[in-house]
Image (tube, rainbow, N blue to C red; front, side):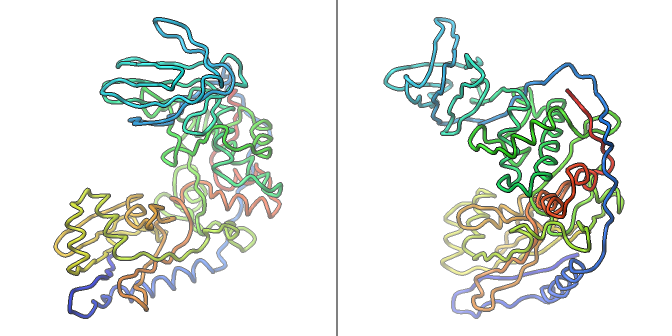
Length: 439
């Protein structure tokens, strides 16, 4: 299925009008919105068993979270004593030494200020260990618990934080789901278990040999001890060691901010259980969409031709002079939707500027349509139309935030507000999984 949109300008010529496909998509948009407003109800799956299976693991594991790759510059400080053992000496570092500045000089990592100087050559791994569990290191103004590793290699420097999984979760849960209202507590419990499950999956399936998990949306957001969230702490403590598993196997589960009412089909999820592989399901209970409480349930954003062209320049590493020429002499931008999922989310898109084609897919679509500050588009679940007041502006009319797979976090909050327990919430979004006491 294709649809085209043309925006842009040509010097001394009137603006290009929309192609016929845009009208077709307007009709489809109305149809999808009617579906989303419909009365289809997916029954809530039975809650997970109350009796926990025991996986028989020996104890809480440590996880290696990547804080930075290909480090160019950073700052480092300490709260409490950290020990650094090098070949020539054993150092104790605390607040009294001040902030160290990290930088590269060729293949060497330099850590220095007016009181300390360390010159670390590749290849080696340098480890800063806390002398007590309550100590923290401050990396780029964010406090972290546990060990700090600088892996200095020929190809660059990787910064890793090694710490116990339960402590790691303190820096994940408050940044993956709102934790500021007691009414959200059951959803926060569900998020703690989902985040722990993902961490254990990554321990068993690490990203690479240097670290287990990334600290951004490529895996799950981790921001150390930056935010104190009592509700998250309670949820992590109360569910300690509990994960989701299928026949004692830990699968890669998914979660996202807001589905907009439509959940994608993935293994073990709501959609897969209800509609089959490759399909989707409506995130409904009590004849209402669970994530309507989300600020991203529905949204409208505006993009200018200039912003889109500069995003293309960055994404495809185009010559900036070419983009300036397009903007100064006039150009035409065609947007064609090459493929949508059954849910309506865009999977593949082709952009044409004059005689150049730029195929984009997946998350890259959201980067191409980022705003002028670089903030990516909330989701791929959108339609577009030209601004009636300016032919160099594009209206993006969309729903949801994130990829739409697995548990909808704002949907979980909506279910919690309706009185559902965390067991019911997890059973709703992951009906094929059971809770397991992993350690």
